[in-house]
Image 1 (cartoon, rainbow, N blue to C red):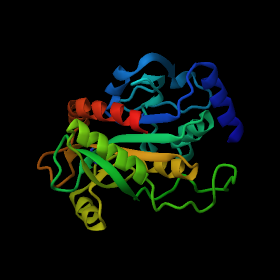
Image 2 (cartoon, rainbow, N blue to C red):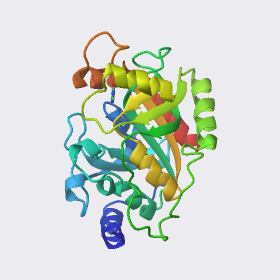
Image 3 (cartoon, protein in one colour):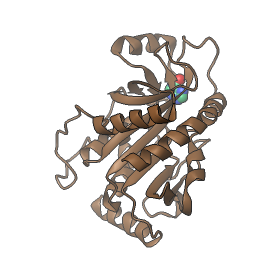
Length: 270
Ligand code: HPA
């Protein structure tokens, strides 16, 4: 795996003049942040050696390098989901590459369903913890101590320091936000109403099909993580109509204005 990571990161380094310390994974419908990138350089996933290919609708699949508010950033537009059939190692492969590229802080974003009934579609939620309900783990297998320890601590999966900074920025900009626990499921089906009742009892505020694997590996590798979720719909049983992926993407796009303003200003404070 290490040889693949070196090959991938060498290819990327040879195709950008930037050397960012901050990376951002953009969730469904949140791709508008690339419009804030100046001096943009794009690398399509399909051209990157050893990179998996993104398939889901609403994701395009490229790395975007450039500057936001004069800070160098790496944006991942399109992520790899476990439900697409990728292994957990493939889902989290870009995080290993980011570490190799010198990334120190990772902002993970996603669209999710609201379980906390005080939320509404369009709510932006700082993820303050996760529940891994995916039934597997990206760190399963022989451990390479060069990456991280066998039993990584997960008492602060989302950096309290970064959360604090994100809150200060939101307050300064008058951006409305909430805070809560993200429950990661494999998907691809939306949850049943009974599952959502169970997840609520377990302490989840939002549910989605991503983010947890990337967060685990980022912590393992020693990256500081900030998580922001866009509640695109209320979860099954709370929402009185059926789910549609189109509505999820549409709602995320509506929330994207606040999201972009927030994230682009957080970057300055990290
Ligand atoms: N469930 C799971 N994933 C999601 C949802 C949901 O309700 N909304 C957006 N992503």
